[in-house]
Length: 108
Image 1: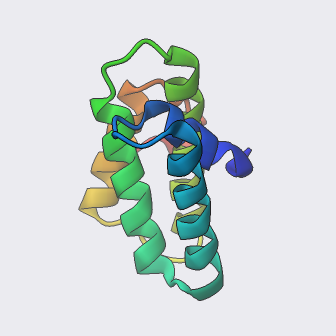
Image 2: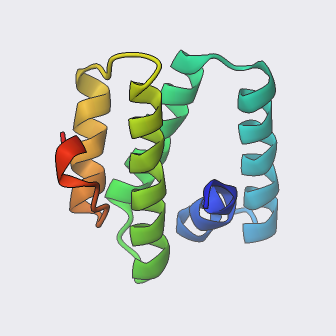
């Protein structure tokens, strides 16, 4: 599912570039985070992506809801490595409003 993130984010992105260009840029950024980044950089990316999901005002509800669920799962995975801080918890609340439905035992 995580492999869908660049495609889903590009569907929500409100930029002047083409969807393909946006997706390529996101794939490159995520790959660099995986290969060279640290947990703080990843959490920053998750919060930025959450902002895009939370502020999205378009009609692609499928992309928004799926992306919200994937991002929330990523916050749950991060919690296994570090404690979630207040901005992370706020991001999880915003993702829930966007349609993410985490297990009851892990809701923020």
